[in-house]
Image 1: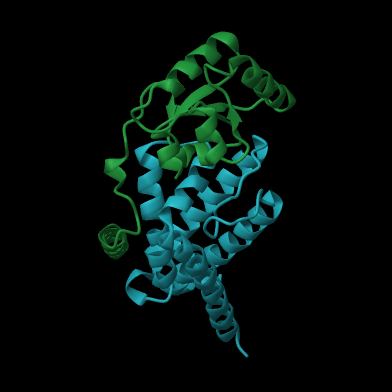
Image 2: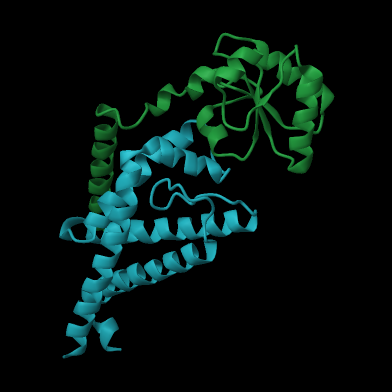
Length: 150
Length: 136
C-alpha cells in the first residue's frame, strides 16, 4: 500500500469520525434549543438575545459543516469552520474549568448528568482538532503537490 | 480563494435555512421576542442554569399546594421564621437568591427582594420574571 493510499484511508476515517461526532452533537440541540440555551447561559459569558441566537444557529452550523465534510462543494470551508468551532470549544472548557464552574458542557445537548469532565472534553476536542487539521493540510498539499514531495 | 468564499456563502445559506426551519416548526422560540428584563429580574431559562436559593413569597397555602423544589417560604406574614431558614441555607453555601410570587402582575416578590437586599446587603437577590406561572 503506497503512501497516497494510506493517506486516503486515514483521511476517510478522520472524516467519518468528525461527521459522526458533530452530527451526534448537533441533532439533540436542534431538537431542544431551549435546553441548549440553558447550557450556554451556564458558562456565564453571554446573556439575553445572544444566547437565543447562538442556541438557534450553532447546532445548524455544526450539522451543515459535519455533512459538508462529505460534500465536495463545501468541504474546505466546512473543515475550516469545524477547526474554528473546536478552538472555541476548547477555550470555553478551559475558561469554565479555570473559573471552577460545575456545569453540564452542553456538548451533546443538555444531559441529566451534573458537571463535566473537563480534561476528557478538552482531550477529545484536541484530538478532533488534530483530525480536522490533518484534513485541511491534506487538501492544501493536494492542491500544491510539491509541498508533499519536499 | 474565491471558491472558498463561495463555500462560506453556501454554508451560511444552509445554516439560515436550518434556522428558519427551527423557527417555522416551532422547535425554537423567537430570539427577538425574548421578554424584556427589568432591573433585578432574572428569566427562568437563566435561573435554571444557576445553583441558587429559591424563595417563595406567595401565601403559605399556595406554597403548601405546590412550589419549586427546595424553595423556602418567605413572605410578610412569616418574615422572621422564613429569614432564619433562608440564613441557614445561605450561610451554609452562599448562592444567589431568586424570589418569586404568583405571576407577572404580582408585586410581592419585588417587595420581598427589596427587604432582603436591605437585610442582607452582601446577598445577590433577583426576582423571577413571570413568577410561579413561568415555572408551571
